[in-house]
Image (cartoon, rainbow, N blue to C red; front, side, top):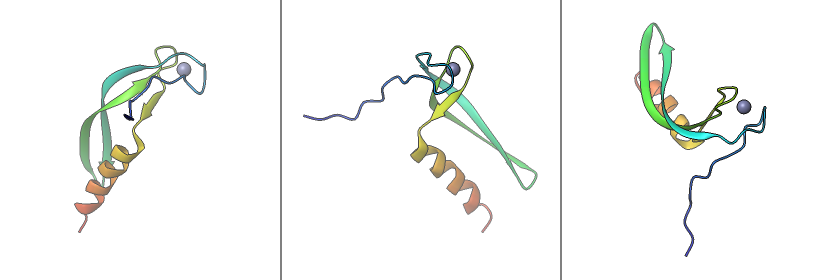
Length: 68
Ligand SMILES: [Zn+2]
């Protein structure tokens, strides 16, 4: 059986093992602020965040939908 497991990664900047964290993502769009809590891999050393690309795209798409 194959499972897709979210693995810890090594930071691209300092090669430190990242940790899973819930982070709040905010974006301002046409003067309105949007926030989304999502899981990300965070580097404990340089605080670089690594997001799930598909979820991030969905968030951006939902912002664009409000435009219509
Ligand atoms: Zn780092």
